[in-house]
Amino acid sequence: MTKEEKYSIAKWAMEHAVQNGAQQARVTIYNNNSSQIEVRDEKIDKLQESNRSGMRINLYVDNKYSSISTSRITNKKELGKFIEEAIAGTRYLAEDEARTLPDPDRYYKGDGPDLKSVDPNFTSVDPQQKVKDAFALEKEVLGTDERIISVSTSYSDGMSGSVMVASNGFEGNSENSYYFLSASVSVTDGEARPSGNWYESAIFSDKLVRKDIAKKAMKRAIDRLGQAKIGSGKMPMIVENKSVGQLLEPLISALNGSSIQQKQSYLIGMKGEKIGSDLMTLTDDPFIVSGRGSRLFDNEGMATQKRAVVENGVLKTYYIDTYYGKKLEMEATSGSTTNLVFKPGKKDLEGLLADIDRGILVTGFNGGNSNGVTGDFSYGIEGFLVEKGKLVKPVAEMNITGNFKQIWNDLVAVGNDIDPSRSWRVPSLVFANVDFSGI
Image (cartoon, rainbow, N blue to C red; front, side):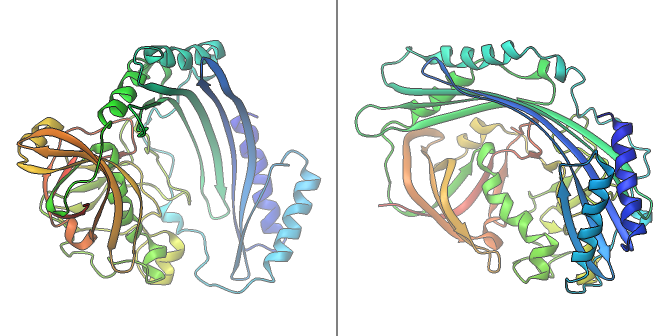
């Protein structure tokens, strides 16, 4: 289905909804094409192709709201009946005057830059090459070390696109693509069987790193042999860039309108207040060319903006969509992140470690929980004991406990090792005085 055909159907569905009792309507037609190949023991363990498309309709009827979806979108008679029945059902729901489309002045007007978020050669990638890529990763390490007990590798890719129209004037479309290669290696030298993982991703096939992925996964696994608990105590914690998201996600969740409205956020009323150290600067930048989170408009059609989220430790904004903006009597910003960029420092991970007399490098979090109301958290960790700037021994089966109000104020160093393939572009971070529980 061409973009023009999608627009034609979407506009028809929107107009049909308005003509049959909806005061407002928003219609999105989407498609997702993806493939996944998993290799294990020199055989294809999984081969999956998916091609999905459908329509999502948001209905606003007499101060009542519903969201419906269907994959049957080409037969107008069936679609029309589906919409009419949905409108009738919506009338049985409770009223909520906060349910409206955004102010039309906030909509994206179609004058944004080309963000280069989709690979124009996506459909030309040879399916056999995808299989070869997955097998090539396995061959990097298979049989190279007697401690290896399993190797699994995978290739996946996807391209998605959508058109969206709203009855109060919005019209827009977006497309994006991705490619992903990963490896997981398990090793043993007795009873313990640690594993290591590594992956690479890209928007364009010719930019995807295809070598040394399994080798890096194997090294991470072997480095963990002999891991054990160490003594409890307070010490610096260095968090590897790939794991920082575990600490950042609860903070972003606390900035969400739904968390604030439901009193599930420890950051209520903190806009303009200090919530972290001076080293903490986060920017939401939707306009990074070929950024994984780049977009010109959000899920409601509101034009995106580059915004400071936290600046030198001071909270600058919340993530508020139209609905929660009305419920909270706050300005709508957007309901989700785009590219979240943590202002980097000047040292790489080795440079950060060199400054540590004794601490723990965290390379992964295992389970745990956090309390959105209080900010308290407890997580299991794995990583390495650091002494005099060197990795001394692997550690595991340990926990960290604390409060996000405090830990972000205890941020004492920021690395420069941002991974540009992620939408959350965060470097490795160092926190002081973290409470570790072990022996």
